[in-house]
Length: 210
Image 1: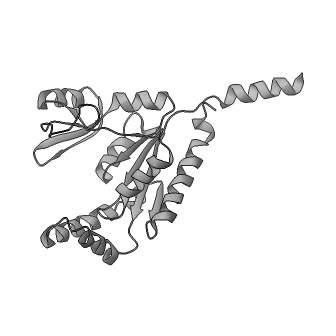
Image 2 (image 1 turned 30 degrees about the horizontal axis):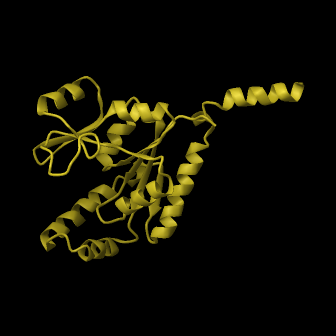
Image 3 (image 1 turned 120 degrees about the vertical axis):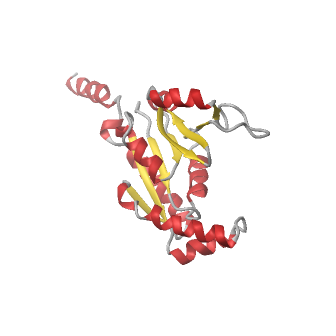
């Protein structure tokens, strides 16, 4: 059945499992398109235009923001990052879903954009703050002061949980993955998203009257 594509927003505090869940969701359905951001920072070795990022100079980026070509944008450590509208809109019209790994601020901007009615937003919570800290320490990627800063930021992130359509407590990665699949399957079946449903039902009715 023909349908319009979804904008699937996945947010969580760092260490809650958002990136792992996003990878599992895309392994389950390879048709999912991961949102590619635009940035004003220089490409790093091995990064490919349109695959890792869309690389733009600051003036090009400002023009895109001014002209409404960005669904969301933010400044991070002196560089700008944002989600170009055109590739997402193209995928949506083709019936393909786009997955966004963004924070609550990015999620707010996308929900408030012209494509906001196509958004499904999901927030991932840790089972406890103690478990969240344990996961951050176990990654062995950050110094203790960085972990402390991440934990402080996590409280701010978690305070926005009620802005989302769905909330998953990621205590077990397998159960959380199944929950994500269930959400996506149900949202795809919403009557308003199945743009070919009307003609299909009309054909059924004609068949009944024949």
